[in-house]
Image (cartoon, rainbow, N blue to C red; front, side, top):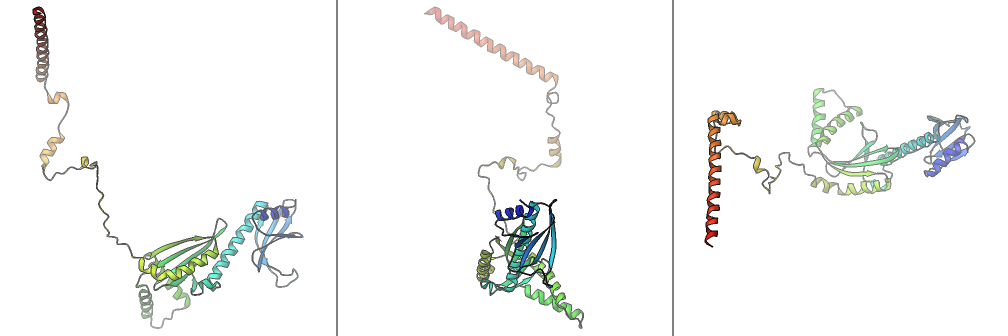
Length: 313
């Protein structure tokens, strides 16, 4: 099999359509775009990878193909195709969100985030927004959705910031770029203190639009229920039911020791020589010997009594 036939067979196993025409392998991405792999060395092998407009005659003067990669193996070719198809799907989903092409999100007006090109936002409820981040993760397009309940004074803070900027220079006029930057700064500070609901990540984009439609309907209820957690909230006491903690708890309130008594207690030496001198030890040995003699005498008396009783019988 040729280089392109091997690539086509691998793409077919992944469910990706392709066709070979001469020295070019065509892989459709959308109705308007396709990938073209053009063989540049049949012996190495090697191929250039282009993104081009689909259904365009080669002699068309407006035809332009953009070189995006060079591949030297079947594995590299399949990976390049998967990556660019995923990227194109990400762009398509973002465009559908921004343009509101799906009727399920007809009531939502998404706008681009100025800091993250893969994120769009839409205002919902009284003072909240939906954030959607669409990006390729390990070659798979994925959309992550977050519901953010902004602080109640968010609009007032934004108006105050614009008012202060105008008052600092009476002749100043904010351009669209200035407004966007100002909005992003204030918005980022507000979102840092906002309450969030993570609504999940989706690879099924039909389901994504269902979730966004539901989120728009539930926005006001979610806002009302997202109450900030009090930082001063006291955690309930956890009691030791088995008394295991009592051994380590020492209460010195009932018997207070002054510094001298504590020092005396710390200086106690448990060495035998410190507690008893030699005379004391001799006395203890003598007491032990006397106790032993008394025990022996008791045993002899008991033996004699038993013998006498035996003789009487």
